[in-house]
Amino acid sequence: MKLSDHVKIALKALTTNKLRTFLTVLGIIIGIAAIIVVFSAGVGIKQLILGEIETFGTDIIETEIKVPTNKKGAEAEQQSATNIAMGVQITTLDLKDKKDLEELPNITQGYAAILSQNQVNYRNEFRKASLFGTNENYIDIDKSEIEKGRFFMEEENHSLKKVAVLGSQIKEELFGDSEVISKFIRIGKSKYEIIGIMEERGSVAMLNFDEYVYLPVKTLQKRIMGIEHVNYMVHQLKDASQAELTAVRARDVMRRNHNITSQADSGLSKTDTSQDDFRVVTMQEMMDMLNIITTSLTALLLAIVAISLVVGGVGVMNIMYVVITEQKKEIGLRKAVGANFYDIMIQFLMESIVVTLAGGVIGIVLGVVISYFLYYFGSQAYGLNWNFTVPIEGYITAVIFSIIFGIIFGMFPARKAAKMDPITALREE
Image (cartoon, rainbow, N blue to C red):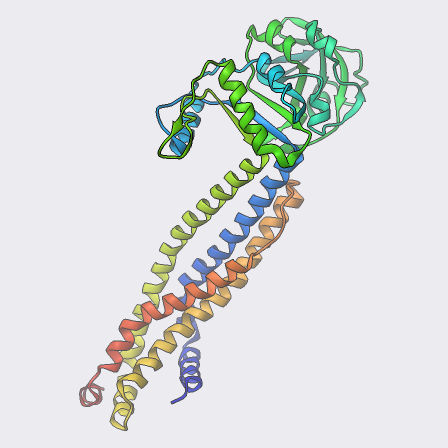
């Protein structure tokens, strides 16, 4: 019997009881739809984050704090992130580091940054605001724009001038449509003159820059926080293709400044960074890290989805056992007139594959629809730079999973039918 004949028999059997067939493949439909959504959302989130990273520019390196550990590699990074999340403070990164890094030949300029929170008020309007301390080069490197007024200057930073630039959202909350340039807001107990308003920017990398109050970094350090350190620094490169080499030289400068003795790690064949209290990252390294995270997350979600497919596959297997019981007479007659083990095996195995493949096709369509709605609400309702994409790997994975689960969960019922004794089958019928 030809393969096409087996497919026709399987389709006829499935269409005999449409409701039962639909309920049989419901678990497969849900699982396959989840696969499509996982792939689509993974690509969408990756493109969203990459787009936000690129808004900072690809010609920069970032130096940030890191907690020294006795671990190495990825384990050290994970422990450092955990320690910072638990409140461990690193106070060794300072403005001298920024200045020394700017002496490297491939670095043009840089800015330091520190974040804080404080109460900001104008007359009877009070807000808990995020304070962003930085220096005058921020406006050039970060590609931000001033809507009205100006950004603060170098001499205002060095003289600890009490001036502020407002993000568009905090300006709207405190002043509404009123003119604000040269007016004063109170931060803590002191008054600060408003010299500029930033253009609306929205959220970037989960940070809402529109709700920031921008202050000269030294003003925030000395007048409000009473500290010497900063959270991170960003430096602009003359030649972005030399980013990796510049990062290596930057690490050498930082280790010299922080009295850290580095040594080669024989296991990793590179410099041991476990005792560093800083991290120098290029944009390419950030993107590579993002690729690793999104790939790992996709694999984890697919493993979870596979569990639902197993449940659906068990449902298919149970229904196939029911079908075989109902078709004992047909099986007995076919074997009595010459059908062999292979013919019966293929018939029911094909029926199982067609069931799961049909569920897979419906699941793919459902997954695409759900993915489109995620894109629509993300881009239209929340203004996210989300692209609607279902990668070809998603479709391929969905089809392969459908066929594999059809074979696996159809194999045992098909073998039972193929091994059935025709005389016993006809007698029981």
